[in-house]
Length: 474
Image 1 (cartoon, rainbow, N blue to C red):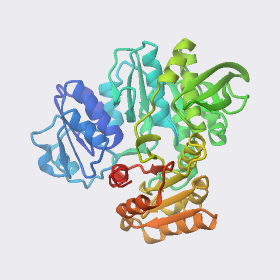
Image 2 (cartoon, rainbow, N blue to C red):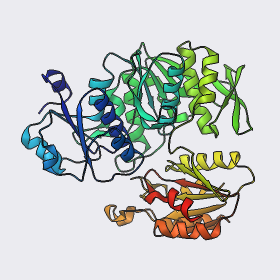
Image 3 (cartoon, rainbow, N blue to C red):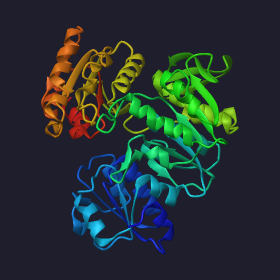
Image 4 (cartoon, helix red, strand yellow):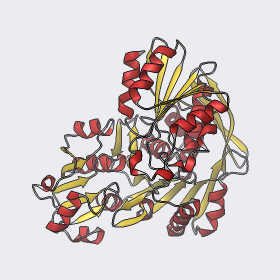
């Protein structure tokens, strides 16, 4: 069987099948391959919007579940997502048939990034927003970029783009690559410009502790070519301590004046965030954006650093910032019903939950913030963050916690307890409630909300379409 090197030896590739197609990166890759002219099919177990709708809109057949017959007619290449094991029925069938196969990042390099200069965005938090803004900025500069990110970029209404310019923006994930390659995806890319936003413990299902994660990011830094640029968050001590591993040039960004690029005064005015930027502590410009929260401003600041490095005119940077609409499922207002605002967000790590609530609280001043949280990731369904989560909800006025799904797949001694989290938040003097299912949350909120409330729903999954259910019930 052939992997990445084998791809280059294949005489002709026409039909491509993706196993676990509905992951954010896999779905984007599938649509990109379809636009490049390949016949694309895929299969998955858990299909939910917005990716399921996106794939259907691109007329890509999706098989429900995994079965050997999904490999008929015989594909020329199988791309294997990291969500499946070697025991997957389609993986086993592909092995039996001797089909060429590869991982997602290998396919990106071969089909999408070949001949392009890569801008790779990495880090525990902010990858999707940062890579999406950089893509929009380069587009506004007339550089016609390609990109592939793990979310739907609102300005393009797409998670990918095939451009004719020399730059390709890639969201570089630290999660493992495939069952046959347990290293992080970002190790497959060769960035001309790399961005490192943060390093924290996450992905408890594959990393045992922070040191193991640091080891993988250290490998990434060592692999960046000496001629390349690393743009990094200068206030992240974990990143700073790894910098001696890097041979390339360094550009820092952050909150303090010691960074190459830093934030100055920030204020909210007429539904926009206005913020100053400084270079080496010296004021440069004030910009306006639709984005909210300091965490998002730092994501944008990383993009500004890229723009400055590329020599993009500051007026173009200003226009890109003001017109950037963000990413679907990142503080996305899903609707307003009877004066009650329902917001959807992808937050699941305690840091992301804390920063998202803080951003919404600051923007919707004097309004009650109701945080609705579904622990769904492999890390959040484990007790590794059990004692960290309570403080993450400290700025919410009311908290609703759903019981995690599929806890039976996690050893009893390692399981996260939503009931305990609600109790711990109550001990902090906050109103917090535990629910066994989504409909119970909807029923409770329908009877206990009032005009002016803001319901912030946080989950990295579909959450049983709770947003539409809430808007119907309110």
